[in-house]
Length: 238
Image 1 (cartoon, rainbow, N blue to C red):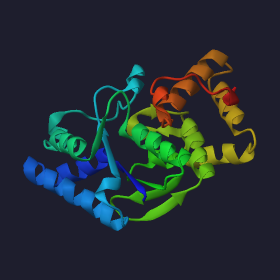
Image 2 (cartoon, helix red, strand yellow):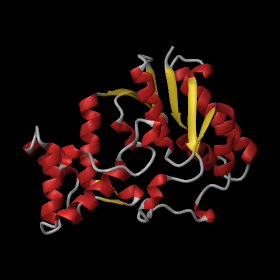
Image 3 (tube, rainbow, N blue to C red):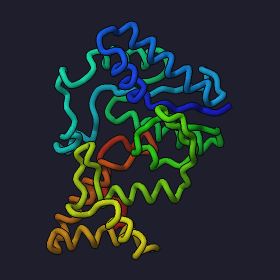
Image 4 (cartoon, rainbow, N blue to C red):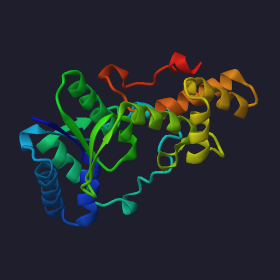
């Protein structure tokens, strides 16, 4: 038995974009996508847990989080919320006070700790912080993320931020510069990240710590339910 962990927000968005004006057809399309996922992974529907957006998000404590996303009704598929409700009621759980991504990682960590095989189904790159088997809902490709690859991706996001979600990293540092910093300081990568912030903010320790802590909180996908809140920056960065 393999636990099939589905990012339901992605399924809902794909289905709603395909059927913008007919909720019944959009829900049928979502059901078909869920069935395709299960069949591609040689699983059973009983193995599926599907997480969809609920109410609130602890990251909204930082006002710039997802400032690049539009919530204007005319820019989102009208059937989206209805499909989300259908998926949450039919296959899983509504993710209150956090992202569906957080809940996916928490379930993956639970499976990992219990020695239960699992696969994370999404197209969202943020979930590549979590080690294990990954299935791309759009391309149907399967690959593996190692623990080192997952942690490296998190560290890289601490430098670059995430423009899609309006998360500010350090201006002028993209993937190539972040890779150089992490490669040049292998063994003390976390401290190198803080030093980069410290220099960027003119050696202002408190400002550098605040900005790095904010970025880390916004990009880090939680692993435990009790961590669904803003957390202090891990000591290894300081």
